[in-house]
Image (tube, rainbow, N blue to C red; front, top):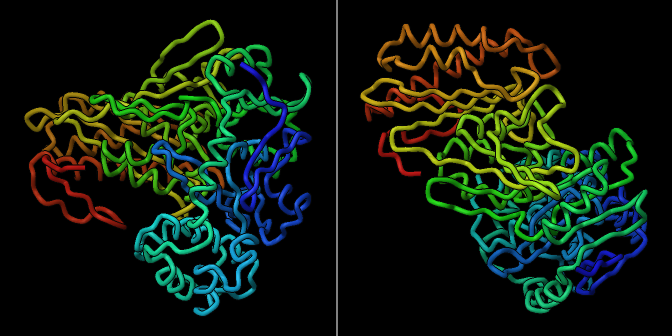
Length: 500
């Protein structure tokens, strides 16, 4: 396999090739400082506010050009190899009229100070290019990662409703064929390596190349979407001399439905995997929808959320409750373990030097299995969990025969509630006194701490309440009876025969 010592991407219809970039260089700095395209703004510098949002175009699995909004402040420049980059500066470049999204924002007075407006416009640009008639919910979801709205919601949403109407008529649509051809030409299948053995940005093109490179540099930082590592650079001001990016590794982003389980490659983003995960249960779809923002889900990966070992990551407790298994690989070996065994202690995972996460296998639910999952945070959208609860119960003749309970935010790692599970096994779902006993047992499984997100007392009380809510919902699902309202937002069909 040949190695390329440059990155290449498309800007304004033309291929750009760069050979002199550092491993910590961000896309935002390149745009503002090198290219001097300063319409894109820096706000929070951590991927929360969305002021720096740009559109990134790539060829999807169906061979179609697809645009997604990303936070350019935490996107490493090298990660854009083989992509098209569109900023607010480009939308009406060389045109007599504004882009339809820009025009609607102006006419509906959707901008006040204007600092965050470029990011809002670019988020709506990607919604516009989905070619759907967007309703208010779709618009709210799309803009959840653009936090400053000093004009208020109404004029912005009115502009979005008008412009994101399913009609595609801009210069980027007219250039689809040419852009697709250019991007396909850039996809040369070569490994990318810029720098020296002591300081580099690398993007291997195959799992074999990744394994070899990582075995040679086990001290390198492995990056998928940089939604976490990007903050090490922008907020902690750390210098990361060796970066290995997973975004070009062929097959690492696969999402396969194998009937009884899903196989999700460690490089698959939440945006790529969310439809498949939603087929397991609607609660999974809701948890994924509330992970970060559309910008974060377009970049962040499930494998990265697992590998960084955060005790408050949203996907690990959910996957542990489903009894997911994790694939680990290095140059000379492969192994598969239960996901719950991967987390050893705070900041410590069962991963050897040079070993990387390659996939996660997620079992689907049997007909007599029921899943409930709830995310608790101070803000409904775009917020880190105070705790996340996931419950999978197997029920036969109204009696619980197996229980898997996992929480995030209640311990130093995502952790199962082993003692509570034992109390639940054998319990008749009609025995509400047994529910209370199980809920009280949670205090034996967890000793949470108090921090800025929640006190330990709050976490304990909420954990008990969530278990009681799950039992309440599941008991109605088993008996195929209507359940009273138990959700703050939205309802789910609690029928045993629910189709998801």
